[in-house]
Amino acid sequence: MGNIKNLEGKYIINTYNRNPDLTPLLIKAEGSWLWDEQGRKYLDFLSGLAVNVVGHCHPEVVRAIGEQAARLIHTSNLYYSEPQVELARVLVENSLPGGKVFFANSGAEANEAAIKLARKKDPGRYKIVTAYNSFHGRTMATLSATGQPKHHQAFQPIVEGFSYAHFNDLGSFEELIDDQTAAVLIEPVQGEGGVHVAEESFLKGLRELCDRRGLLLIYDEVQCGMGRTGKLWAFENWGVSPDLFTVAKGLGGGLPIGALIVSAPYTALLQPGEHASTFGGNQVVCSAARAVFKILKEDGFMEQVQKKGLIMKEALKKAVSDYPNLVKDYRGVGLIYALELSEPAAKQVQGRCTEEGLLINAIGDNILRFLPPLTISENELKDGLKILNSLLTEHSAKN
Ligand SMILES: Cc1ncc(COP(=O)(O)O)c(C=O)c1O
Image 1: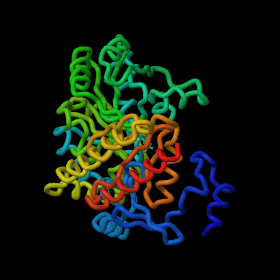
Image 2 (image 1 turned 60 degrees about the vertical axis):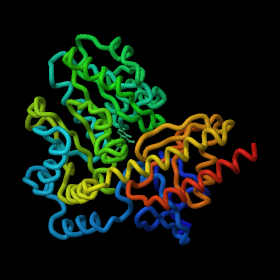
Image 3 (image 1 turned 90 degrees about the vertical axis):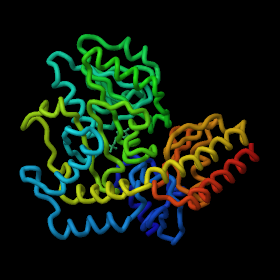
Image 4 (image 1 turned 135 degrees about the horizontal axis):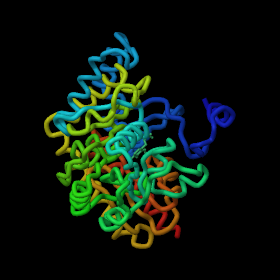
């Protein structure tokens, strides 16, 4: 199996830059744990980048996929689909009652659908204001929506009509709005940008601003939705509803699915033939998502996420005071958290965590991000935080 790492270099385009010495070859998983080909065990504080919200191979998700796969995998969207309608029903009833759903295969595709819908609303209004540090995907439109110029550089010219304001700074959004602006697109919790949580007054202000100027307020909940913040949708933390929002990552229990959920007044904007996807929301992915949703809706599930979130918060807060020369800040809510380091040591700490059996994520040089499965037990969470703490101690002692 060691050969796989060599063969990868030969056959796979190197967009992910995996380090063969530090990146395990994972071959099986269960709950909050993964195993590599040598039988080494890893505790998961990454969840496949916010995907495995109910852990790995949850029996209910495995069963739903297996049963549906044995019955009917795919028909195309030319035909009616029971799993799709059932999933759309629970999505809408639990978010924007009276609304409707468009199914895609990924977060970027869900955002593409949102962008197209926003451009259709009022002829002549095509501009969308997003935030610096945001991340909305890698297709040309979502890349252009992403407020990180480093992602644009190699692909100029980017799609016209996007401008970037400062997150949590209402005035900077207002300044960019003109008569051609169609929408504001925002992550209530910025994920890839380093885990920045929106302030309540900011979201309330954006809602009021969008209403006053006739703009759509669109939330990208691709990463922060599906219970990640301790509420089903991140926006529930502030009680500020969008006109449309997108979800993906956590929705399919590991299968690729994205969804755009549109509130009642805007459900007829996209007409037959104006948007489509061959695979979008096929029978198997929708069955998996229904099973994930059922688990998230179990009594007490979100309270547990909030409780575990507080354990994580306390540990990270303590890291800021225990390692003042290494750890500059902690940020997050629910079970999406980050530590900002005061030196470019993120990859080093992440590598050492992997060696010690804990999978975490480094964003750039200075930020460590933690996204455990929402089903992680309190003991597993504490064990992972202990490993992290020991490596912060080790790093601080060395420097
Ligand atoms: C907030 C947000 N939006 C969109 C995307 C893009 O999703 P995908 O990689 O499924 O296209 C991501 C991916 O990290 C994300 O975090």
